[in-house]
Image (cartoon, rainbow over all chains, first blue to last red; front, side):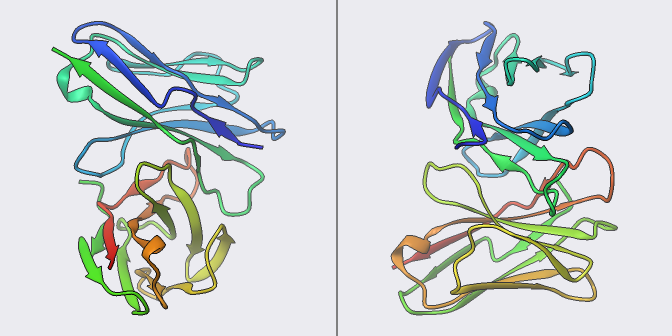
Length: 116
Length: 113
């Protein structure tokens, strides 16, 4: 079974509008972390936001917020006031406490395209 | 700038050849991770080292190997290359403790012809 699922291969959003990128995860580990990374066309991976499984509040970082619904096992990324520079691939990832190496497992990504 | 350095940035080689990708982690980070990203795919975890020791292994082919040296830099060796090995190979490092955030290098883009 996929540990991280991103069901939207591609999305369009109008500049200045908000957009939600979906992410669902699967784990039986009670302690885990969820991450979102941005990959622009230049290829580098840029960390955006982190949510811990025990965090009571949804994480926010500037225009990025994470809509964490633990019971549904979802961790959607919300980008407010989209900008042209937000056009990129976005990856959701999870770190499980019990995995030996502490590595992140990534979803397949969502390509976001911001229209002027 | 994440502080993680990868070389080379681009590499073109032929099938059957062997290449070595190099990574220097952020200063102070003991963990190094290698990921493979094929065209329009997500990142696949290959292998992780912690302070010179192999810590975890993912879907790494037997033709691939890695090591981490006493100065903490790491090398990923890819041998008997096939067309399907063409990909972007990322190295990342992380601090001990904390959230487990990975800091990625810019990647090494390998093209096998």
